[in-house]
Length: 89
Image (tube, rainbow, N blue to C red; front, side, top):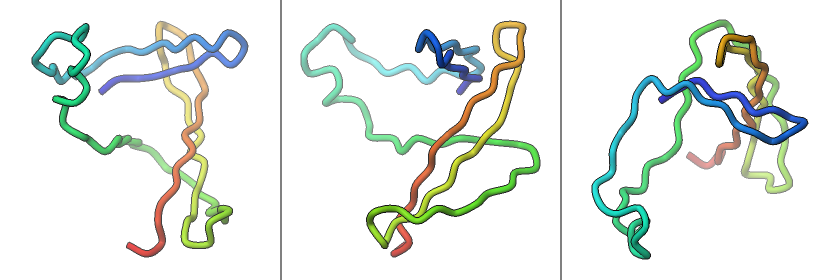
C-alpha cells in the first residue's frame, strides 16, 4: 500500500510505500508469476468523494473516475483512477 503519483508529461510513477507484502521466490525465475496469488487490486480513499457513473460499451458494465490528490515526495500530486464494475453482481 502506498501513495502513487504519475507524471503526465514524462510517464514516471512515484510511490511512497506504506505497506509492502513480500512474495517468496526468485523474481528472475520464469515461473515466478505463476506462483503469486491472484489478488484483486483495491484502493482506499478516505475523504468526501463525488462520483458520476458512466455507461460503458458493454451495457452490463458501469464505471467512474475518481479524482484526488495526495502529497507524494514532498509535493501535492493530482491523480485519477478509472474504475469499472459488472452490474450483474
